[in-house]
Image (cartoon, rainbow, N blue to C red):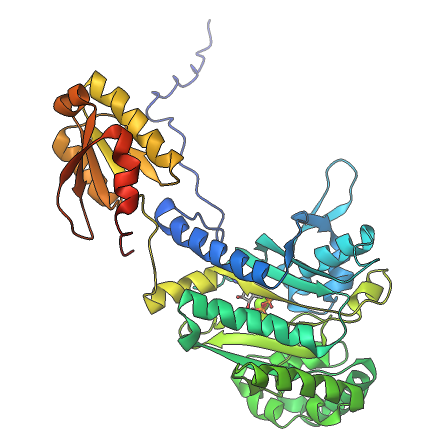
Length: 442
Ligand code: ATP
Ligand code: MG
């Protein structure tokens, strides 16, 4: 007797087995070409302003030893307690972390390469940072920062310089209207120790209303309670003793110096005695540029002085000051403010027929030789559909090359925006003819 065997299910037809399309990790965004043009413009503007102030690029890895951030940022901060992407190196078991911010890595690099041995250094870096936060408008899990650090400078002049530099950037980008500057001094170590004791006393008197976060931080990081966003704590926070009232003479003089320099240069600011920042390494000057146009995620750039960080990371005492600028928030602000310019090519080259295509290719290269952006139609298409693509590209001119033009070695230029009459020129003179035309208003 033969036993019935269950035949294996036939292979599913190919279409049914088509793999499901994968999606990006939540909170980690693609920047598609339509929007990336704006990113490039912002990046160019930022790099240009940094260069004007003598800041030079420095590049550090995206992955660092976890201990760097625990020691640098502080064990009892939001970032270290709950936001880091930490994993074990499969080969040797080392604990590694995707950088949640750039300062610790830059200071590590400066110590490792003895960067400030001969002279202080102004540096900047840029790129993605990673924090496991709840994604929402202006808050993502992979986001981008420009990060600026002045290493080895003790005076209030570099603090003010960095704020001036940002104020200049807002103007250059046309968003100065929507952004205000808040500054504070959180003093030096002894002042912070004295303040801490007074804060703990104050919070203990209000122990009944403290939330879990606040209770946990009461003896580890009471300063962070001041940064609480819990509405129920706001009144108690407002009544807490202020570090600003406990500053010693040299912290006071430093803070006065920052204010004087800002005033000298006409940069408006507000002293915000409650301003503390989320990372532990700051001392003395802290500052934030804030907008009210992005809802709760209003801080576009923030920073301050961190005179103790080098020592904390095993280096020599080195005073320093820096800030980070959130690129996504700046892009959102530009979009909200409508001050968005689009980068477009000077010309889009429409062609049909073999002889015309060869000439069109040479015409495109001659425009690029002259430093212009020229897009050569690819993939064929009717005259009408090519003209549509030319228009969508935002080009100032369509350059048309058909059989007649190919035979005569000419191109017909049709202005698409910015006005002007249609004309025909020898291809050899095309670049000169288009260079003479006023640039299109973008
Ligand atoms: P927030 O209070 O908004 O959480 P933060 O104090 O954590 O900001 P910093 O660590 O000082 O921010 O980083 C500097 C800048 O980087 C912020 O002002 C902001 O523009 C940007 N930024 C910080 N976290 C995020 C994020 N998760 N998504 C997008 N941008 C961010
Ligand atoms: Mg944060």
